[in-house]
Image 1 (cartoon, helix red, strand yellow):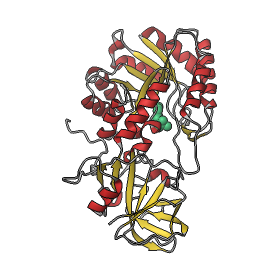
Image 2: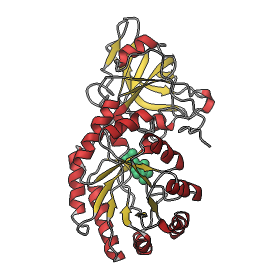
Image 3: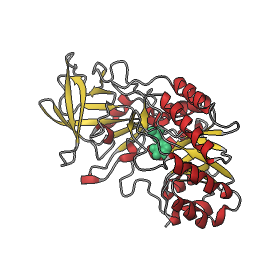
Image 4: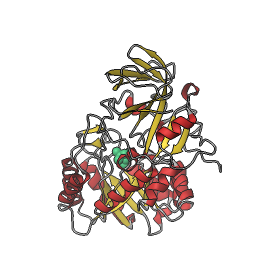
Length: 411
Ligand SMILES: *Cc1c(COP(=O)(O)O)cnc(C)c1O
């Protein structure tokens, strides 16, 4: 019961021996000539994004651990000033507690096993739990023996389907009247009572938060009990090719406008995942075969490229070619195929690259710090991967990444 593996049986990312810290991606590829996916971590970018979010958000910032649970990324989030963690499982709780003995951990999954509640409460000092049903409230009260006067209870409110890339209200959340009833039922047991929602992931529309906060204010009014916390969830977007969000300040302004409708003295929480860590990793894949405009590469939807598959996200990318050979000036659109035998293992992009892409070339794919590493599986035995820390800035979806104009030649 002591061993903890954040990714089940998936092979951990391997650090190559004797690599200097903080080299460039090109230098790492030149040194390693990697035939396995190479994860290039940028902890300094995560630290900066966390610091910027903490400075801009008018309340407490909880990092949503599921987005990327690599210890180097968690440490970077903490170094950026985040002292609260949104965990959804006992495994996440144990991982965060092992790294940060002092952190506040919040158990934000609306359906928890009894054992997970008990372990979080008794062993890991978790005091705040989310719920969206009466049954879960009963379970939490039983497993924490009534909460001993220090229980935080957060009611998850469902939102109407909005403009996010991923809807996160399809599965969890109480309808407004139900949420009001749950606030009333939880109030006598709660040292802290809160209401939370999630507008959906990669939500490009700041006004979604204003609308959700207006609904939260109505629910609190209908409940007729005091509420100490409103948690505006995650969903804050980052830039991908073809998806340029408004600046973070616009989201904060929309939240401030919505929060003005809440009763005085309510404390705000946010649970960003993607916005803190997306820029914190790229993955360098290698072309193993070219068939016309199809490129077979060594990572795919069962590895770090899940969101490039059926969800259809596009990612910034660039070619890296060894041997000092020139790269064609003409660009062309390619489809990437992952290494597994499943025909669903395809990333349609389009991936715009020099027209002469060939076997042995590498493609660096950026913005994979969010829901990249975290979603790897061992399917078909393609889970071996390397990891290095690099000094490069994040691959923003501007300046040629996506248009195929950025390409590098290494020795
Ligand atoms: C996934 C999730 C988050 C993080 O969402 P992002 O879109 O990555 O910011 C926050 N809160 C809850 C409850 C989640 O399920």
